[in-house]
Length: 396
Image (cartoon, rainbow, N blue to C red; front, side):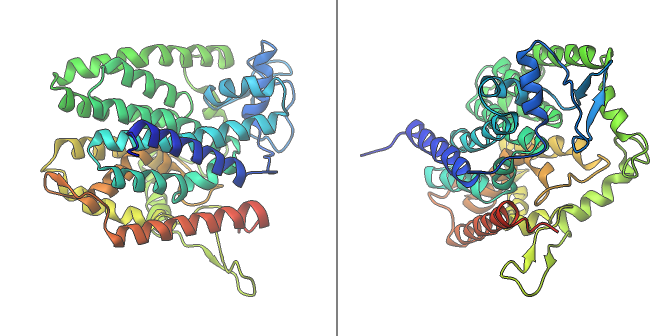
């Protein structure tokens, strides 16, 4: 029996969601900002009425009102579950399902990008099981859930851009992703470039279509800010940074770049003797290429920038999505790996596959054995970390 791409994508999406749900069985989170907000939205409130001390990122926004500073999409998606389930459970279920389902959408995106079937399956498995998306989606605390919810929409944006679909559709996908993780909106110009190349359309007209598609979601966020802060600007984040030792130069600054370079390339795990889990993830993070060594093939993929406009556009999308992150005051802790990499993950996976399986203008039918071996190592590392952190609390 010959399987269609759609059938393979459906299987990958279902398997990813089930795997994440099973891995998270019995686990909840104390940081249920989105679950509480979902329950509040069901009662017609955009604020929550209680601010427990451990939810220290709730910001006062009125008399006996506290507002969640993050964009609202994860809470909106959690509303049907929050109507019948505890808030923490509703939040983690949305996180696990969204993160797992992204496997199937990414597979289709990689196929549209040109990757052969076996190569695309390898890329989807790498993203789902061999990156920090695995732990983050399963854990489901608010800042992880935001990444998980953004992921399927960001993958869909890559899919439609690589297919040469209508520009406004890409804008809708980016807009939805940005309502979970704001930095991903920065990838829009590069995805417009990829779309223009694939569709044979003028770039400025394509970019305009992407902007038009994303504009309603930008207006939703502006309205959300007006409700919360009485301002079109994101005043909540500014309040969080006041007096914080990590934000001595404001929310964003080039002076924060060195700490991100260290986090991405050099941050090690801790060595703890006398235990089977002798390498313990650190809450501040672990270097990206130690967490997912398969991403080392990114550098080989970058060699194709001059030869292929599509590869260049995807590389630019990854860079633009990460720019707001690498100038941010913190490196994303508490986390496993470097969680901000998830804002560019579909593009990073595509570049790694180019680095392994594409030579010049042609793709090999399957990934190299070395790449498959390193993807397997990446999966083992992330499975180890997920078990160590969630089941044994081995998090230094």
